[in-house]
Amino acid sequence: MKPKTDAERAKAYRERKKLRDAGLLPQPEKREPLEIPRTMSLSEFIQARGEELIEAFEWLKDYGLPVEQFHTAEHKAQEIEWTHNLIRDLDIALSTVTSTLSNYWLTEIDREIERLKSDELDVPAKREDALSKIVRLTDMRKSLERTYRLTLQNFEPEE
Image (tube, rainbow, N blue to C red; front, side):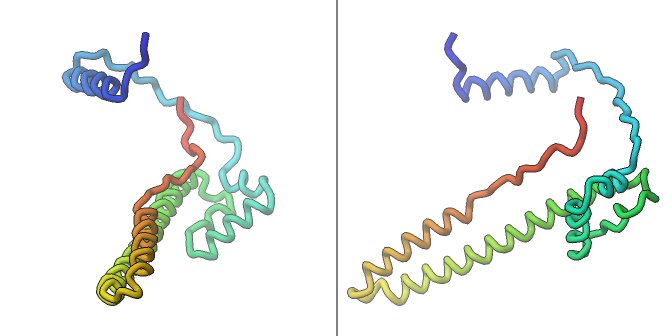
């Protein structure tokens, strides 16, 4: 049997999705969530892991992130939710900062390309050098349009 092409896999997925949405496929049985007993709080775990982890949380605190709750075990019930919120906030902040920096460089590259087109392409002595710079700047621009995914360890237990 030959392997399916990407188009065949996509078509099969769309067909399964239509059947599932129409309620014609059996639904997987829902299991009761498994409760994991917590023997220590997250803050106690952090303290037990040593200086390196404590310093990492201090670094986060220095940047204004709300991590004071991880220094005591007073808020055991909320600390997991707070950690999820912290991860979400860091993800949003990182995405915003990288997008802003990328847009800055795209704007600067576009300005330089326009300057080279208007100032140097008309001068025969500078034309070849200007074209070379425009090609290099265009390649730099393309590299900024790429996106990368941040690799994070799964932080939510799954069954």
